[in-house]
Length: 273
Image (cartoon, rainbow, N blue to C red; front, side):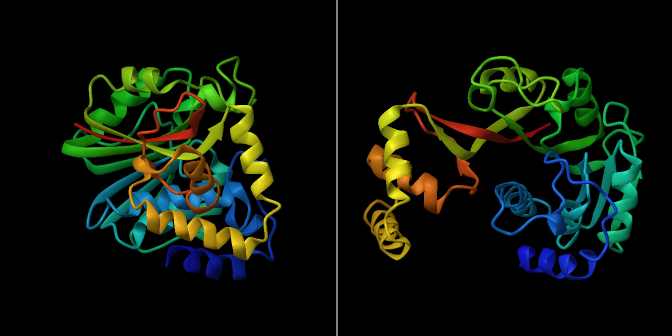
């Protein structure tokens, strides 16, 4: 449903070229549906849509605004904010809806009263902030008691291999343990993963070799594995890699992968106040 809606928006927006695509900000009409950036971002917002029914929602760092639009189809009210005037102007033009308010705002200094939001969504945001603790304190302040934060962030163990951040747009990427430490004032933390990365040579070879198998035959293999092992945790490791690569590549999955050589590229965390 959501992808169809985005496709519809793409149809009448593609004639204009008003905002540059840098590779960091997802602009749906400038990407193909098969593009990894497109699929990663759409899946995150589809995941968040499962939590926001009849809620007042903050989309913190909304970017081009497509995610706010997706949320607005089930939420009561959505507030999309971004520090970029260009992004907000674009969002107002392309993704407006009767229950969306787009505003230019610093996510470290939210201009909302205490206990205002039911849900705060913050995807690929916290790594852009130098004072991550300040941002999370502001989120906690504006959330109602019992409210929920849904955020995603890159896993530095895979995106930068535990070394210095390689993306010029990011100030600080973290490990899962560091992220959970930052969320010390929140509760009921649940961790999900998106896109698994393989750090063992044999695992990488299996993924690459499988790409040479006829697509229809590969689909049958994947379907067989899914039917044979309905529980991902009980699926043999080599089969699991095929599922991660082809069936679940961009899906949001509960994080329970214990193999040291397989790590998520992105963490998606839900937590409450």
